[in-house]
Structure formats: C-alpha cells, structure tokens
Length: 396
Image (cartoon, rainbow, N blue to C red; front, side):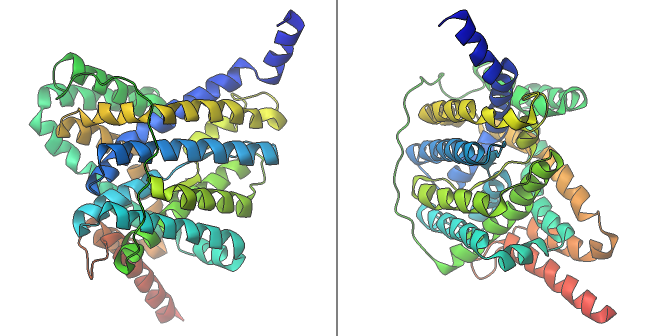
C-alpha cells in the first residue's frame, strides 16, 4: 500500500476510532460476561449451550450495530441486556425454569420488541411506566446478586477481600475500567495462585448449538414479559437518550425492529436479548471516537470484526469462567453489578411522589418469591403499578 493510500485509510478510520471500538468491547464484554454465564448455569445449560449463548450474543450485537450504523450513518451501538441476564438468573433459581422453556420466553420478549417497533402507541404506553417503579424492579433484581458478595468474600477472604478493595479504589480513579480490570486480574490471580479448579483452557472455535424453544405460559409471563420490560426501561430508553444527548436523532422504530428481530432469530442458540447500549454507546458517540460527528459511525466496522472474533472463541471464555470457584465467580459478578444497582436505587428514589410504590416494587422483587410459577420481578412491577394507580385515583 502506498504512503498516500495509507494516509487516506488513517484519515477515514483513525486510530482513535479503532481504540474506541476495542475499549467499548472490552468494557462491555469483560464487565458482564460472568452474569450471562451465570444466567445460563442457573437454567441448567450445558457448557456447549452456554458457549453458544455467548457466541450468539456477540454475533447479534456485531451485525445489528453494523447494519444500523452504516444505514443511518450514525453510531447506533447495541449490546446484550445485562439486567435481563440478572433477571433470568434470579427467576430461574426461584422458579426452577429450564433452558428450553427459557428460550421460548426469549423469543416472546423479542416478538414484543418487534411489535413495539410496529405499534407506536405501545411504545408510548411503555414510556408511561413511572421511571421510579421500573428502576425499583431493576434494583430488586440486582440487589439479589450484590448481597451474595459479602458471603463469598467470607469464604475466601485472603484472595477476594483484596480484589474487592482494588475494585473500590479503581472506582474512585477510573470508574469505567474498574470492572474489566478487576475481572481480568481476578481470573489471572485465581489461576496463578491455584485458586481455580482446573487448568487454563485452550482456545478453540465455538459452534452455535440449536435448542428448540418450548413455550409455557408461566415462563412467558415470569421471564419473557419482565425481560422485555426491563430491557426497554434499562437499556433501550437510556440508549436512545444517550444518542439524543450526543446530537443524533435515534431511529427508534428501526432499532427496536432490528434488535427485536435479531433476538427472535438468535434465541434458539441461547441469545436472551439484543438491545440498545447505554454506557458503552456514550464511548462511541463522543469526540474521543472521531473528531467529526458525521464519521463516528465508522466505529461499526471494527466493532463488527472484533465482536465476531470474540464470538468465534467465546467457548474458551466460558470454560475460563467455569473453572473459577463459586465464591470467586460470585464476587466478580456482584462487583460488576454494583454500579447498575446504585443507578437503579437513585432512579427509584428520584420522584418523591412515587417513593412508596417504588419501595413496594423493590421489596416484592427483592424477596425473590415466585407465585403461580411466575417470578418475583413480574409481581414487583405489578404491585408497584397497582399502588401507583390507586394513589393517583385517590387524589382525584
């Protein structure tokens, strides 16, 4: 390649854009991969099914981000639903859902996303759910994970207490990098100190593994509906807000249709939900990505390549995490969710007039008690909304 051609490539796709794509993927993947694998484990997924789950998510995010960003010439970044993965794990433990029937719920949630894209009144109805109640449901789901951290540290304090302290120090210095650095150092430290249960796994290509979804009403209501709602409230709506703040008009209907359709197609391979990104989207929509706002969509090609590469070897990452003792794994997952939990708590307490309804939604969800085979997230949301409606009617 001539020097002139090389300069043109650099001008078209500068190093800052490549670095932003790599940073976004590291932050997004490393920070939350323990939660996704724990959700699969809670459903009784085999190692092959878990690896397929992660690979399908990687491919889904890569392709949807590329399609939307290239077509609309703006950084439309997608991600997997981390709150959704937490919801799945906690619901599976409380209600005993199986892997195949959970896949049916994933299909249902994706279909609801597509319907939302097609029926604008439905989108407006979802937006009318009070933010404080939606945040309370999310906080009730997340707190179940975070409460496991002290017990896990107690099981192995010599290794896990320094790791938790390191995480807190990193939060004060570089909040965005606190989780990925802690996860990487925790995994490396576990293998170097002999804390891990197995030898370091070899890298190998990961095949997608089809499992025919099963559809049961209890699972559709207990996982599918809350998965749709929590993904909308905690991922899609904030993701669109991030784009607006960066000066980009979000293609709401197209984004919901593409991500919902991808979720439906990839669900038989394990993918639980492809949604809009929020935190990582902010990295790709700012000047650090590209000095020209009209060219920040160029983050999509390296995003596509890097996430597809991760998908090809995702089974090795799953095997790496599977080799960790449960206390180490639990601590890593709990620390990764501390920041989302704090955001959810702030959200549930933001509107004083809804604080009682939010508190009820939080307590019912956090209790992790299923009723009629339906998990607590659904009942927490219903309890909060009922109290909100009754309170509003009494004031009239």
